[in-house]
Length: 249
Image (tube, rainbow, N blue to C red):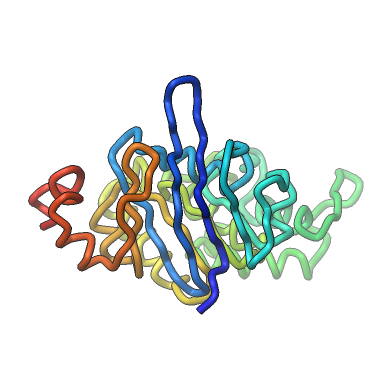
């Protein structure tokens, strides 16, 4: 199966620190591929390079066979790559439905203004509601973002990523700051998306990673030291000693 996203020999240095060091991985269609590693391993830097927010010093990023290494971040969603969980994309004074509608109009290259309220476009509202229903927020569609819990904000951010209609989703620590119940809800939502998208997941919640991942890449000091199945990663003594600990053995 051909890769939808390929990372080849990616390197990024900040001063004396090599944040990404010959990183390599492939994400195939319908796969949920997790990236794990200790704090400071370079996971966020790697995701930022894939999203186009940081330009690598060396290496290639291929999306569906196209080299997007130099493509600006704002152009990557239209090519099929969406990054989730960027809080800055939310409009606190808007309803959940309006937030998703704005994301849809942005994808379609349209604009909106006070002279033409979003709520007046029934087709747009119906489409936006569909994305909210996919993340179990349909009943909260009329609520303002400012009223949401932390976990609900994460769910909304996932809806915004889905609204981009991208084939590849980058999810950067979606369970961060969540309690056990919220983490379980997000894990169930991501499980429902498996097979429909190629998903690259960075996450510290190892229970969620082991429940969701088809394959796992372990990143240490910016270098991909192992890619394998959950069983292969669990059983690797070096990974267990350096990162997982005995509770995940």
